[in-house]
Image (cartoon, rainbow, N blue to C red; front, side, top):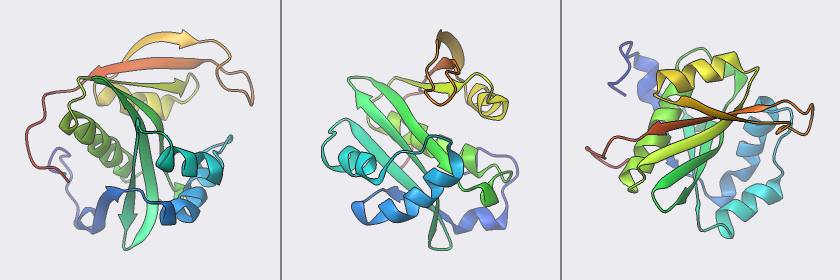
Length: 166
């Protein structure tokens, strides 16, 4: 957490851990709060039990899941599937902490690059990704089925892992 210049006492109450099946009900609350096209409980259950490429983590504040992030790790590349934070906790730079933790985990696992898709209209998320080193790499036309919005494909290089695993 020292990578953010504004270290605040409430940041100390945040913790990160791997997602487990029992987390799905709380994760669904985050999912429905964050996305217009939320995943289903079955999708999360499948990711956690059947997809050997999938790695998901939750972010807790005072014992409550307030965010989560997931990725697929294939050879030396990580693909961020989802990253979400409850609306009540946005604006505190905690989304950036969650993304940093996911990127650190990917590097720890030996991933060299990381990618994601983001709605072209999501200026706030795009700004965060650019701040974390992601660069635009292309467009997926009509990617989002709710409104046929395009997705911006972004990539970032991951630094070699140095430090402690969380």
